[in-house]
Amino acid sequence: MNRVLTDSEPRVWAALQDPANAHLLDYVTEDPFGAHVFPGNVPGYGVDDFLADLSDQLTGTAPIHLWSYIPTCAYKCRFCQYPVVLVKGGRNEEKLSQWVDWNIREAELWLQRVPELADAPIGEFNVFGGTPSLLPEKDIRRLLDFYRENFGFTGETTIRFEGDPSTFTPAKLETLRELGCTKLSSGVQSFDDDVLRECGREHSAQMCVDFVRNAQAAGFEWVSIDLMYGLLDQTVDSVKRDLDVVLENEVTAVVCTKLHLKSYAETRTGVAGEQPAPWQLPQYREKLVRDGHFWPALQEQYRMREVLTDGLRAAGYTEHPTMYFARDGLGPEKWKSIMVDQDKQEAEVAIGLGGSSSCRASEAITDVNWKNYAQTVEAGRVPLGSATGFDAGAQEARAVKMALSTLQPLRSDLHYARYGTSLHDSPWREKFGSLAERGLVSVDSGGVTLTEDGEVLVEAIINTEL
Image (cartoon, rainbow, N blue to C red; front, side, top):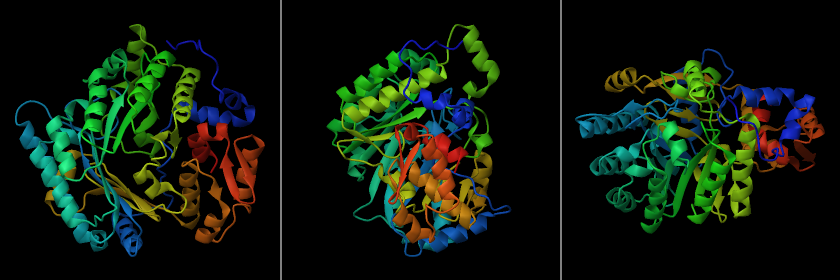
C-alpha cells in the first residue's frame, strides 16, 4: 500500500501538477536514476577510442578525480544495484587481499596504457565500494601506499575513504589518519533502526552515531554520511529525526539520496550489477505490501526531501551539487566539483570492478562481471567493458547539464569561452525560454539560474529537456 500524505504538500507539488510539466511528473514517477552521468551518442565507440581521448585530455590537465573501487561487502542491501562481491565464511582476509591485488594490477595496466595518467595531478583520491573498510589494515596500507607512490599526488590532493559505519574500528581510523586520509564517508542511510532493518542493513543507528563521534575524535576534518529517503516503512517524522541526529552531531557533510527502484542498467545512467536488487523485483515489493509494509507516496518523498533540504540549509549547510550538503562553507564536495563545475569538468578515472571513467569526449565502464574482470586483469588488459563517445553538440549539452546540477548560476561568459556559442542563441534560447515561462529558471544577460522549483526538479529537467 502507499501512505496517504498527512503533512502539508511539498512546495514543488504545484509545479508538478502543471500540465506543461507533465513530462517532469512522468520522469520522477518512473524513477530513473541520477543527474550526473550521461550516455554518449556516437555509435560504435570503442574502449581504445576512450583511452585515446583520455590521453589527449590528460596532457596539461588540471587536477582530476581518481577512484579505487573495492567491491567487497559482508552482505548486500535490499536496495543495492551496484556490482559487489560478498565476502563471507572462511578465508575472508585472503579474499579481501585478492581484491587489493587485482585493483593494484589494474592500476598498473592503466598506467601502462595511458602513460599521461602517472603525471596528472590528483585532486581527490577516493577509495569506495563495496565496503573497503572491511579490508585488513595491512591491505589498506598496501593499497594507499601504492597509489601515493605511482600517481600524481600533490600537497593539494585529498584522500577519502568510504565504508560501513560498523567497520571503522579505532585501529583502522588510526591507520587511515597515519596514511594521510582526511575524509571519511559512510552509508548510514537512516538513523531509524526499524528502517535500517527493512533495508537489510546489519548496523544499528547507534553504530552510525558512534562512527561519526569516533571519526571526529580521531581528527578527521571531513566526516560525511549518506542518508536515503523514500525507503520502505519510512515516514516524514522518521526523516525529521534523521535530520536532528545530523545536526546534533555536527556532521561535516550529508549526501541525501532518493531510493531508486528502476534499473540503472536500463537507464544507462549508472553502473548496475549483474543481478537486480531484491527491491527491484515486482513480486518482492508486492509481497512486502501484502505483509503490511508501505512505500512512501511521491508527495511524501518530496516532503522528506524538503525536510532535509530546508533543515540543512537553515543550519548553515550549502548544497552543491544537488543534494550534496556541506557545513559552514566547507563545500562543495571536492571530487564532484572537479567533474561538474562549469569551469572545470575534468576527467575521472575509476579503477576496479564496475568503475565509471570519463573525460570530456567520452566515457567508459569497467566490466561488472567479477570473473570476466579478474580474467582480463590477469591477462594483462585494462578491463573496460564498454565505452561511448560524445560528438561536439553532445559535449556542449553534457557540460550544460553537469553545470546545472551544481545549482550554481550557469554563466554565459564561461560557456562562450569554452564553446564559442551563446546561451542566448538557438537552441538554448528556446530551451531556457520554455523553462523560464514555467518558473523553473530565470534568464538574464549573465546567464541562467535555477529557481527553487528548478533546483528540486533539476534531475528531471536536464534528463528530459536538455
